[in-house]
Amino acid sequence: MDDPHVDGMSESALADLERRRLRALVEADLAVAHQLHADDFQLITPSGDSFSKEEYLQHVASGEIDYVVWDPEEIDARVRDDVACLRYRSTIKIIVGGRESGCDRYWHTDFYEKRRDGWQVVWSQATRIVT
Image 1 (cartoon, rainbow, N blue to C red):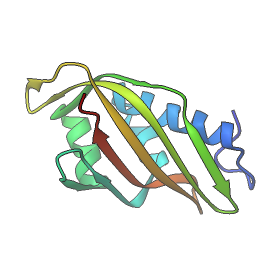
Image 2 (cartoon, one colour):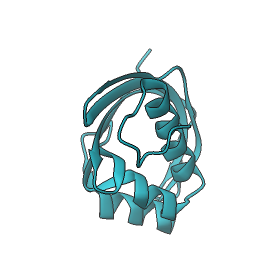
Image 3 (cartoon, rainbow, N blue to C red):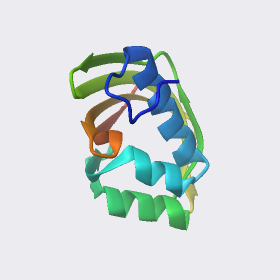
């Protein structure tokens, strides 16, 4: 995988970086999660809630948000200079506030920027797929 601190980032390397971010969230690896989320990160959840980096990662650290499964399908990515966007579908099983969901499918759109600390996700939005 390309180093997130290098100048150029290929589309496949960005997809690998996103998979690394997802593993960090599932494993509650806060050191990696802090590195890959920009300080001004914002998550928009399927229910329309908004979380800052600090709020989101505090919920993951405390177990309030516990990703049991986060299995991405093929990740499509676009990289241009110091910005990039990706989207993909995934299957997620999550426990929020002690309440476990079944395995649901989601669309994800994530916007990355190359920052002083390397490539970091700035915006993330998830939409539940209703079938």
